[in-house]
Image 1: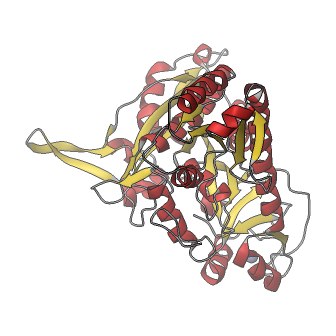
Image 2: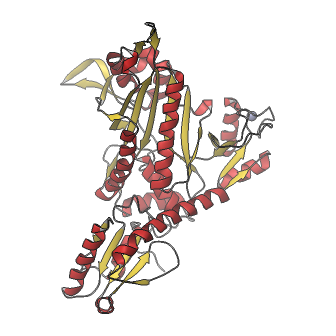
Image 3: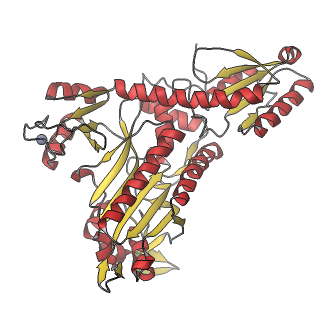
Length: 477
Ligand SMILES: [Zn+2]
């Protein structure tokens, strides 16, 4: 079978070409005119909205409130937290001129909002009664990107950033883990990504954080993608921004803060976890169209029946689209929706109508074309979509497990990270992490929360292993 102009390079030939071609041909994104920027097209934006919706109600349900803070931040704010400014300065976009003249103080286009939100928290918190303060912001941020990749690393991206302030360490740590749980739930139940929740090692921590937690997903090329992070800041930002409160005892205390974010990068994760040589494969819970009906043949009868079927599916809670582009052949339309990852296609022609059936074709699986009764299709399809969602999670979990190996010695470690992840004992020394990265390209992705207790020696240097459990290593995006 030849590749037509809509086909994509096979994954096995060049995974990165596959990805770059697919995001464009599936009409998710286009390149922006400024280096590293991304135009999110309607199909891609709908995906984001669906993910956003799932995350947003969970954030609100757990007591957080949405707010919005300015895009421009005085440069001096970033300098107040030393590690934070050091970590972010290579990526900053700085506004030096505005209104036709040079500004007295340059403004930073936010790379993240800890500083400006910290400043406001200091203003809004005075007593223990003001705590915890649980904020979330949906926003765009800018981090200058030298090696842009659509969704994965772009100069400007969309995300949510949670920012909270607490009376003490325990409450702030509970919050940090709560946010991580929300992310793991959305990744697993909505995006069908079997993520590994864990803690980052010191070398991989967020700039200014005391502890950083992550969910790590495995892509179909065996690389890891950090799909969401949650940080316990200790009192670092609270001290820099003077976020303090009067305790019940009357004493002045310093708040403990957290921040946590999930971004449009998740869409890249969905594409690289589920997609195949035919194109995208979207989990039904994120698919802009869960079902596409393709009416075949001339005349009015079939399109009318297709619209009627769509109405009944919509009433059953299914996101359905009728592809009535009669000027395009059925084959062209079938391929198009396969490329764009629609979970289920329904083909409806005059003969089907006569026999009271519609032909169902799933995006994956070997059942082929299955006729189902038109009358009962609205009852059948929600279950089909649930099964498809579960199948994707199962398949991704099996793939991840098949590409994750326990590695106790250097030989098996290098083998494992060549095609997937290694679970290895590690000393925790940044210099040793650096050696591993230089030799294999792999970095510590996380110390998994549910890892079994184990002692041993570092897979690279032979010193005693840290953390009391094995570390997940892999190459990453
Ligand atoms: Zn070591």
